[in-house]
Image 1 (tube, rainbow, N blue to C red):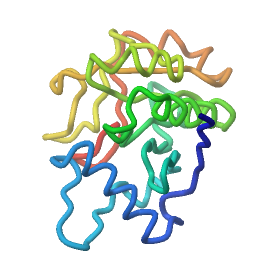
Image 2 (image 1 turned 180 degrees about the vertical axis):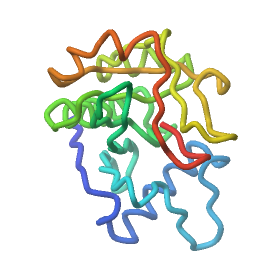
Image 3 (image 1 turned 120 degrees about the horizontal axis):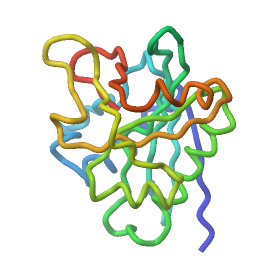
Length: 193
């Protein structure tokens, strides 16, 4: 079965497409994406202008992964970073390659873009999936924090592993400062990758 991965900027997606993204998220994890009547909850902060990657089967979206981007300061350097967000595959379609292809497409886009490095967190049992789908490596010596603010989310306190890929020559040259460190995403309290 050929799996086609499509993409659209979340901010430019029409209401029906956003509804389908939310329905998939709700089906996979109702606690994260609470659907209340016809209201469609926003899945991404519009400021981050997420790029949504998705796969369809039988007329419905069955796999989704978004890439969010921003510029952060780490040490004395500014880096353009990206991370995967809201990755989900419909339980009826898991194990068929939809999630892998969607994550692979999102990762290829990051690699071809002007992003210096990709970074995000996941539950430890999912790390092998991301390694297979996009060559994402766990960096056990890196802690990811949402911000310096009280109440900001942290990878270590959430029990998440940090996954990273260095893409640009600038990031590769800064490998020593991007390892054995804490990386601040400078996000509003409650947001995380």
